[in-house]
Length: 237
Image 1 (cartoon, rainbow, N blue to C red):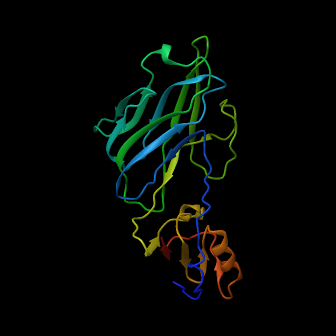
Image 2: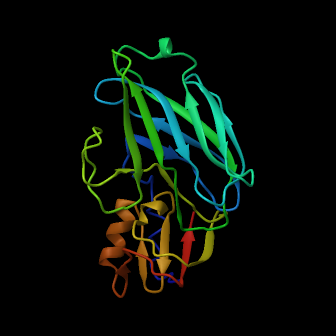
């Protein structure tokens, strides 16, 4: 950990954190080896039609899964031969509850014990089913797990799959300095946007524009852009 910039943290103000949102998105916060509520939001329906059903496939390693019923609809569980919950399906109580047009934002949620795998991403592949005015089902598969593909339309005709909802597992933290050994390749440092600063050797990262500017101009300090497996980092919250 390098502490040669005495004014760096003093000048750090509010962080300008932003995140890309898929049309079906998951949100945390998600901390490894904790019990958390994960919300899934549906930004829109399918080609102008309202959503009727959501099937969310769960990642491996979740424990004590409990879905929440919502105003969208009741939840049912799918299990494997060992009794492990593998998916949750939320469905409207009746087709008459489906709106005549795609006008509403929907939200569902589940509570689970998250795996002890910090700095990894949990994907929740989701099948979104809508009903058009004639009662015909329209389906969109949100199952892509690649961070590098382009986001296409919701028509299901793109060559790349639509992105699956996901959450990034953060490590346990405490106010002040936290020391971690990162065993995964972290490409997107925006997961540290709520931190004051991140140090890895002689490189540093901050989402705060003032602190970022100081890092860029400080002699013998490099800009941290990614973290490789086996790297020891210091993070101040």
